[in-house]
Length: 209
Image 1: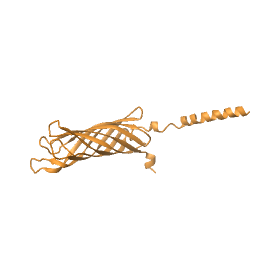
Image 2: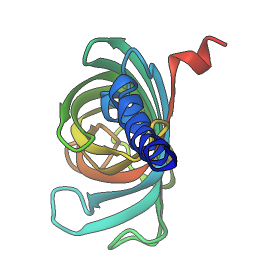
Image 3: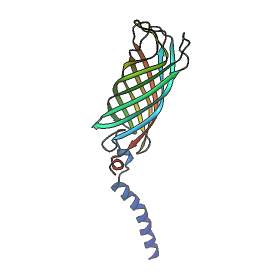
């Protein structure tokens, strides 16, 4: 009698976790894209590096370092709205005695694809403004200025990997950043910016409390 009771207890102990796992699927595996209906808002912070060139029209490339922050808002299915703020700086521009600081604030749409192994791949197009300072901005019709503003456009994309139901890692985001800051040539710049960082996701259950 005791042996049969013991066997029944062992079977019950082995069966209950399996039955529970079948009845309640692991939530993280089906959380979907970085931002979705279940996780409609996400905030990110990270490091950014920008490759630019000086003097204008030549290949004297130099590197600016800085940080970036984004807010993501789910709009519809695979579409999200992005608000991005970045700042990059270098203390020494080639063939110049000055540095350069750039701040961009842009917004636009993002379309994402859900890949295997908790990976989100996305493409986006952002537009906004760029502010440059601590530098030399020549003008044809006025005295050179130490600061300038311009429209900015940035098509790009990236890859994000889910770590938990509230945290993802942006392994890479690459952008082609175009602006129209004053210079001695065409007044146009085509920069490449790469960034990575952490993304904090907020579920609809938490937001609706």
